[in-house]
Length: 239
Image (cartoon, rainbow, N blue to C red; front, side, top):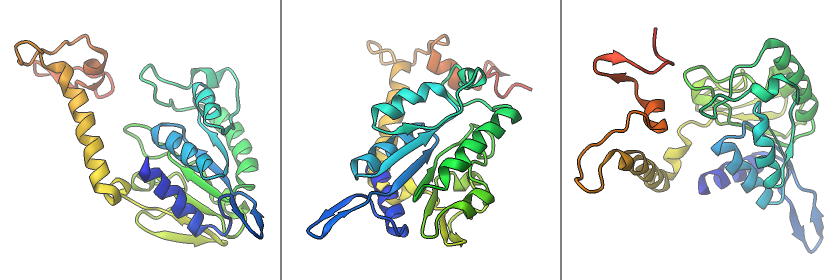
């Protein structure tokens, strides 16, 4: 969680607008923060920005995330139609949407994004380049002094103007393409990574005999096993 506080704090530093602050001279109006992609990173960013006093909204192609966003105090932004109801795979990942849906969603996002002070993009599709969510036209519609934090910079970026490892400025809007954010908090990242590895491997070990005992019908095993007995078994990588 500390990592996402760092991201939101960095965004507020880059941005001329502040997160809500109460002083003896009065209250500074809170920044508007827009989170694009409501996975683990997006949810943490929403919670952190809300806790710091921002007006938070978020979007995702998965309608199921609406309740999660609202439970954290955010406003959910999405074109809700029949296609959106089928926008999630059985494993919980976002599916590629049709061009017609993308056009409608892009229009809604364009109208929303011009009002924002901070935009944090987190959208990734496993095995594919990061989808473009913030177009050059959208960037130019934002207020000078606004900032975009592109967490997908290493996979090509959710904005075509993003440059991995650099901060660029377009029409007064800063686009931060930071890479290896986890490496900036190496102690926390290592601890969390180790815990995840342990939780993944522990069910594969028989608690009594301490021997390897793989249940090939287990949902996690089926979702991660690529090969078995010399054959490719994962449907996503089968030719």
